[in-house]
Length: 284
Image (cartoon, rainbow, N blue to C red; front, side):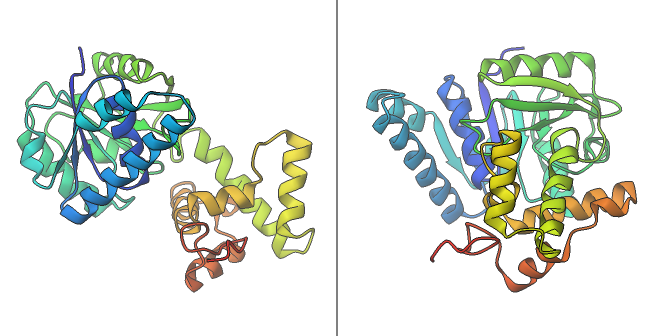
C-alpha cells in the first residue's frame, strides 16, 4: 500500500515533526488542529525547522519551499477524508483520543490506516474506539522527529499483519528504523528510559550529587549524549510525570512512581525548557 496522502492530527512538537518528514518524502500532508492559531503556529515551527536545515546546507531553499507547499493546514476533521493514513498525535489523554478517533473513523475510507503516536497508552484500548481495529496501529516517533531514527511499530491485539507491513514500509520510507514491539505499557524505550530518569531524580533528592554532576556521570560513564535530568527538561517534566504515573498504574510497581523531585516541579510549573526552568534554570 502506497501512502500518498497523510493526515496528522495535532500540531504540537511531535505533530510538526511527523508532518515535516512525511512532506520531505513528497507525501501530501493534511495538518489538522481544531484551532486555526495552533495550525498557524505549527506551520511556523515547521518553517523554522526547515530554515535551520537550509542554513546547515542539509537541503536547498527550493526543497524547503516544496516541503511547505505539501503541508496543508486544516481545522475541520472532515479534511482528512481521502487520506491513506491518519496519524493521531493528540495529548496523552484517553478521553481526548477517544473522541478524536471515533470522529476520524466515521470520516475516512475503510482501507485507511489509523495510527496513534501515543507513548504510554494501550494501543489495544485505543483500537476499541474505531470500527476497524485491524487497521489501527501505534507509530511511536521520538523527539525531535526529523533527527531521531527510531519508530516503535506497536500492534494491538487485533492489528492485522498487512497493517503492520504497510506501516513498517512507510516508516522505512521516512528513513526511520522501524522496530516491532508488543503492546505493553511504555513499549520498549519509555519502559527503560523513564525509570532511569526517575532514578536520577531520586539520586538528586538524596543528595548523591547535584543535577549537573548526575548528568555528567551518565554522559561520561555511559556515553549518553545527554544526561537524564537534562533530557527530562527537554521532554517536559509534565510529560515525564504523566508517563511515569501511567507506568505505575499499569504495572502496579512502585519503582515507576514519580519521584517528588519531579512531582513538586510540575506542581510549581517548572516543566523544563518550555517554561524556562526545570532541573536546570534556562534564564527565561
